[in-house]
Length: 150
Length: 115
Image (cartoon, rainbow over all chains, first blue to last red):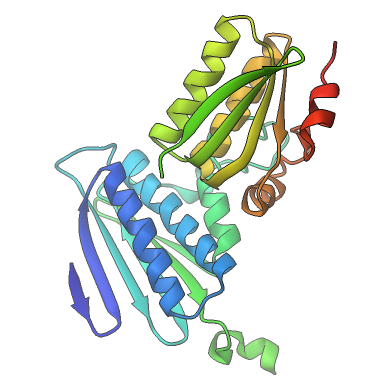
């Protein structure tokens, strides 16, 4: 674990234990940032889903591949990045889980839930791998809602 | 908290009392194995009591959907009982709330199964 200012980062193995650790850290960071209990749940679940994607779909549990997770409270937002070393994800190829033909599929809801729970979600292609950035604006901070304030 | 599942028979319906987390890994596997075991024994009227389920992720949702379709394809019925607010919200967001038959009262849920 590395701590620099308000930033905490980890390099984790491609295991379910790492998923649980990322989820728990997100819950703690969100609570410290002042999010409500419901938002803490949403943030930690979004992080869990992103970590599952990294461990399962990205690195495919490969013990040689790592997952890098970073949490930063900028004061305006909680910013979380999760990166894997997998073959890469084409976000546009992910089917809509709400489409009638996909509604009863067993998988494919992770990214949809991440987008539902966070304010902003960005994907970046690495070589190799995928990095996802999850952003949730800190409550009571108007910096993330300047358009609304105007 | 790991997931636990126990079953009981009420008026011809198998009630599965679940507690803990239904997530990728052990929780999802326990649910899958429990439903498969019931179906293999001919129990096709299943009520999943989620009242003590504290957390469910997308893998857990997928497992619920899989259980629902598996039982339905066998000519049976699978219903959900006592959703927590978090699970309720999750099923709303994913548009699955109207797919499942969700009940709050166990006696009424039991009575709603086809005889």
